[in-house]
Image (tube, rainbow, N blue to C red; front, side, top):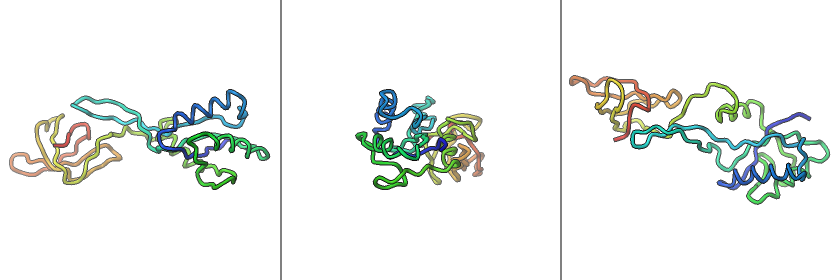
Length: 185
């Protein structure tokens, strides 16, 4: 068989503990080293702004899930999967019930998740923890329109931009701004 990615469902908040436990089981020889190759906690890097200071933080975007790269043997897959399922906090593999053989995620799904985490290169842009909604009042804090206030007309989250309606010289004008350039009022 070949290496494939599987999704392991866990109690939320137990992801790091379960990753350490699986790595310990591998190093102790309870799980063969040639079966589990990698374990990833799906986290993304977000840019947060608090009190005017920009800070980069890691947040789990799939809380309660781990990505496990495995090459399950045809004959002994049950022993490996049961060793993992018996770990406190593990509820099972995604897409399987009971003692059924786990099903891997498609290569495209695995690639998409790994790109979002930054593990592999892709069309990844920095995301911001701050969210805005249409109609929300905001104050521009940076750029040529600093100190102006306006109303959010459009949120372009994929590009980290906003279109804000600002009153300039008595006329309402749409201005496209980066999310870093505004703060909620």
